[in-house]
Each structure stands twice: as C-alpha cells, then as structure tokens.
Length: 336
Image (cartoon, rainbow, N blue to C red):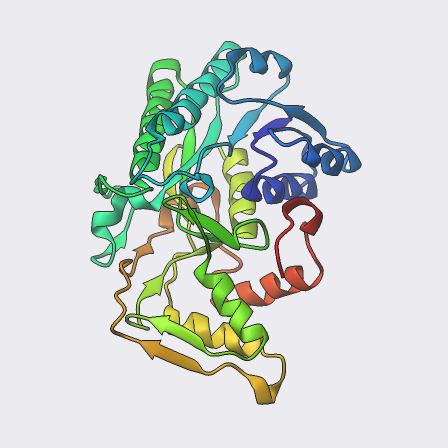
C-alpha cells in the first residue's frame, strides 16, 4: 500500500488515478475536504493532513506502507504575495522544507524506506538554452523573483532527503518538473501576487473563437514541457523500481517551439475550417524565458520511463478530449 500526500493537488489527482488503474491500494491526504467526496466514491481513504503539523502524522498507518509520494507544497503559482510589498519566504520553508522533514521522520520511524517528491527546473536556470541538461548539471539559479525562495526551499528539502538516504539508508527520489500540462486548476496562476491567465490558456481561448494568436518575442524559442498523465505514470514506475534513487528530470525530453504550439492549438481548437486563428507576431516584446531541454535518459534507464505524450500534438489531442468531457471539472472548477 502507498500513501499519496497532496492528493487534492493537480498532479495528485492524476497520480492517484494512475495507481488505482495499476491495481495498487492507496491512502491519500489533502487539505481540501471537497476532495473527500471524490475519493469516497473511489473507495479510497482520505485524511486531512497539514504537512507542517507533526501531530497530524499520527493519523497515518504505522505498518503496511511500501512508499510515499509527496506532492504537497507551496507553489509560486498559488502564492498571493506581491514581493514588492510583502514577503512569504518563511511560508515556503515551513511547508516545503520542514513539511518534507516531517514526512521523512514519519517514514523513518515506521520503517518506510522511500519517498518520491519533486523540485523545480528553475534550479538550473543558468543552463537553459546552453545545452541538454542532465541530472549532473550543477545548480545555477537566480536570487530574485517569485520563484527564488521556492527553489531554495525545495533544494533544502531534497538535500535533506539525500541526507536521509545516506544517514538512514533510505532510497528517496525527486522529480525535476518543468511546466506540467493537463486539464486542471492552472488556467490562471499567480505571478508575483497577481492572478494572470496562463499562456496556454490564452492560446486556447483565442483559438476557440478564431481570434488571432500572438507570439511574443522569438517564435522559435522552445519549451520542454510534460503532460500530467506521463508524470503520474512515472511516479508509479519509479515507486516500483529497485533502482530509483535521487534526482530525475521529469520532462518530455523534447522541445516544442512557440510556433509549433500556436499552430497545433489553432488547428485543434478552430471553431471551423473557415475560422482558424491567424498567428501574429510581436518580436519587439521580449520573452524572458530562453529555450530549455532536459535529458530523460536516467529515468528511462532506472525505471523504464518513456513519455507517451512527448509529441505536443498528441498531448493536445488528449488535453482537448479531457476538456471537452469536463474531466475533473467538479474538483478544479476550471473555466472552459
């Protein structure tokens, strides 16, 4: 049996579904009781757990647990803090770092030797656009902006997971995520405290009514994104493999340009052949995110992971199918 901490999150919902599809038994935790009804219908025990409260872990089983997936955390996309006026560094460390230590201690005390968690692709931001990035790439991150302290807190958490690997002979691992695509709650996200529509959502909304899709900056900039269903399957494969250990890139391992994204979305979401969106360009508007591409060889070697949705068109066909059928609409209340 496995525990999935953070099952009321975007990736959590899909990961629970994947483990159930594979015939595994799971216990799940979250902070939002509206998810309890969803999991009750699936026959899954749901526990309301605050990662920062040690006493909450007394609710979890002390025997019969084979591993823990840790998906809870404070993300910049959910943080309503304008750093020009306020600061929430303490919250990132309380949730992401101390919370991880609480999970590690629960596992150590109860003989559970594996946690799989996550970290940010921004921890190697200095290498973006310069090379295919492997897990051996030294950290190179920036010290400003709303992702900075998030990266620090996750790095501290994962360094502590490695400490438990070496000091307490655990086999912990963590996935380095780029943007994760899929039907869920992130049509809008907070950027330095301001709620803004995501770039993907803007493209889809415009394509759906045949309006122009505008690309800012260089249309040949590429992104190595990943689909949430691939992530969920990777968690399952990694948990079942004896070779899983340490850091793993968790992307598609394939770049998709802004031009290709716009073309695919314009085609798939066109209201009719006659009303397909025209792609326009504003090269004078600087896009501050360079291209990035990650190697997926380690995940393939250690637990046989090959993404099924690495092709962007394949990813978007499945995305549109889920959107059209209102997948998880009752949980995430996204706007179509």
